[in-house]
Amino acid sequence: MSEMMIYLDGDFVPKQEAVVSVFDHGFLYGDGIFEGIRCYGGNVFCLHEHIVRLYESAKSILLDIPMTPQEMEDAVVETVRVNQMADGYIRLVVSRGVGDLGLDPRNCKRATVIIIAEQLKLFPAEFYERGLAIVTVPTRRNVPDALNPKIKSLNYLNNILVKIEAARAGVHEALMLNQDGYVCEGSGDNIFLVKNGKVVTPPTYLGALEGITRNIVIEMCEKLGIPCEEKPFTRHDVYVADEVFLTGTAAEMIPVIDVDGRGIGNGEPGAMTRRLTEEFRAYTHVRGTKVPGLVPEAV
Ligand code: PMP
Image (cartoon, rainbow, N blue to C red; front, side, top):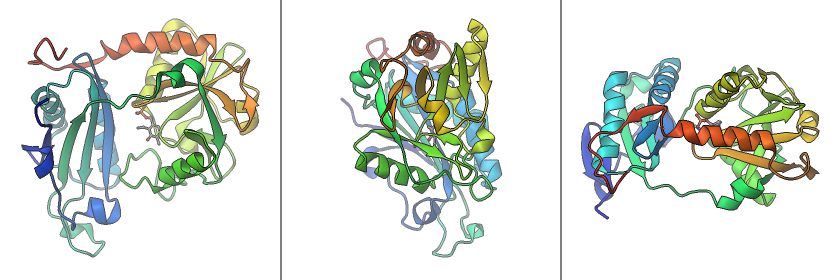
């Protein structure tokens, strides 16, 4: 395979040469934003929605991205084309840029823009077939007043602590609650439950990222005539749900079969989760932006 090329501030550079300064505030302070995007069969899934969220995150943290949203979309498509990556994961990072050791972002003259297109490290198939066991962890979600979880910022320490706690508990993913004890989301995915034929997910004002996969699931339910609601719920509601599943760009849709030692439903991925997952897979190849110039073998 030819060498991976990284988009770095307008140029394509080989992976080995794709380096940023130690004075970049993304590195020093987690000062920046990012997106994780997937490409399915030469289709960049929901590219537009990801770019909209990126620019909303930027606006919220007063970060000036030195490109228009259209230029950013074009740069993502071009990165996929240059790497001939029909199926894979795209990481888009915009940091505050190179400054000095002080916090003041005014010393960062230009944002750093990085786009990486990488072959997927897929989750093991058994995650999808058998479902995941998860636990609730002690670390609570960032309060929206401090750092709003709707901002997909480079400051992921909250999520990393959750991941560490999950690993120490011997599971792959965990549930985060907010300060009031309501269910928020996983370390890197949104949560849904199914009860009596209704699909429910927490409203994002409780403290969760407005996941693009989450929005697609809500949209699919509407299309299929399945009742779907954004409603606060507690751990108890999760324990007694008929089905639970997680959604995210990397995770796609993963059934959850056990939460804090309580088996969910009959302990197997449920019918609604399976139905929505099937529908979701069809969406991934049509909803988004096609990458021109991929050689047939790549697609
Ligand atoms: N919550 C968090 C904290 C995440 O990092 C992610 C992954 N981006 C998600 C939810 C799922 O969002 P999306 O469906 O847009 O990938």
